[in-house]
Each structure stands twice: as C-alpha cells, then as structure tokens.
Amino acid sequence: MSLTGVTSDITKRKNYETQKDDFLSIASHELKTPINSLKASIQLLESLKNKPTHEKIPKLIKQSSKSIEKLTFLVDDLLNLNPLSGGKMELVKTEFTVAAMLNSCCEAIRLSGSHHVTIKGDIDVSVVADEDSINQVVVNILNNAVKYASQSKEICLNIEKYDQYIKIAQDFVDGIDEEVQPYLFEIYFRANQEEKHYSGLGLGLYISAEIISRHGGEIGVTIKKGNGSTFWFTLPL
Image 1 (spheres, rainbow, N blue to C red):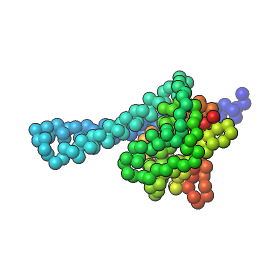
Image 2 (spheres, rainbow, N blue to C red):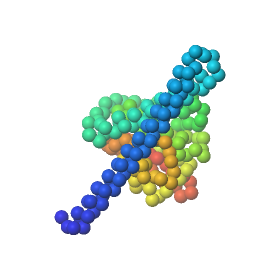
Image 3 (cartoon, helix red, strand yellow):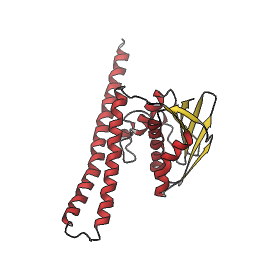
Image 4 (cartoon, one colour):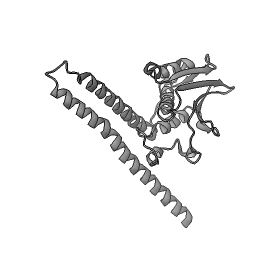
C-alpha cells in the first residue's frame, strides 16, 4: 500500500472516531434530557401525593408521558442499530397492501391534528416485504417531515408502481443543502450538524437505508431547486 493510501485510511479512521465520539456525546445529552425531566415531574408528583386534586397534577402527568415517549423513541433507535450493525437483522416477509400500511403509519399524526396527511397514486398495489421494518422506514420519514419541514402542515405520500418495483415518495417543503445530500444516510452524520440543534440521535435515516438495502431496494432524496426536496425509497415487486 502506498503512503498516500495509508494516510487516507488514517484520516478516514480519525474522522470516523470523531463522529462516533460526537454521537456518544449527543446520545448522552439526548437521553439525560427526558430522564431529568421525568425525574423532576415524579418528584413533584411525590410531593403532591396527599393532594390528589391539585391543579398541577394533570400537567405533570402529561409532561411525564412526553418524557417517556421521547425515551422510548431514543432507546428504540439504539436497539435497532445493534442488529443492523451486527448483520443479524432477520426479515419476516408477508404480502400486504402498501396504502393500508401507510395509513397505519399516519394514524398518530392524524390523531394529533398537527398535519393533514394524504396518500395518492397506486393505492391498490401489494408488495412482499417485512411490514414491520418498512413501517419503521415510513415512520422515520414522517417524523422528519414533522420535525424539519415545519413550514408546511401538509404531508403527501405518493405510491408509484413500475415493472419491477414500487416507489414511495414524500415531498418536503423545506430544502436540503446539496453539500450534505451525499451524507444523509450515513451513520453518525447527524452528530456533526452544529449549526442547528434537533432532538434525536440522527440514526433514523441510516437505519432506514439499511432496512431498504436488505430488501433489495434503494433509498434517496431528490433536491428540487427552490421547491423543497423529496425523500423516496423503492421495493422490488
């Protein structure tokens, strides 16, 4: 191996270690935030245990519930990462209607009333895949729509059927910097974004890419000049 090749390998390794250290730092911070909030809520509830009608109790219970939901989301990401990185993920494939699966994924957003969700395209098409893991991919994309494209209250999922595969796409109103586009689906990428702070571990797109890859499909994002961007993935028929 040439000296240039050795230097390149060392640089890549250092960059990877830096990304990993940044990720661990963010993971620690993201986990501590809901834990501390939950701890504070429970301590206040404990102090009010002899006052069951106190006006603060409903608010504290709601706050505790939100903290638990966030913790569950973070822990799920970490647990999902392990079988993927170890190559032990098993797919249990069944046939299901894509539109029905998408409707199920959108139910929580619809109930919250925060966004209006529509599904269009080839709504009768079926596919053979691991429904639970594809559900996870869609939920990751929907969560990104809610979190990052806050300017729009409309979410539209489109299903397209081709000869050998189907394509599911979701438009974002907000654009994505072309410089970061090649790295969106890499592990730990979110950890290096210092200009903005978003909650979460940044593992969603990496996990989604791994799931789609193991199905023999593709995943990506298309940037539209001055008109947002589109996240999409394909599954073989």
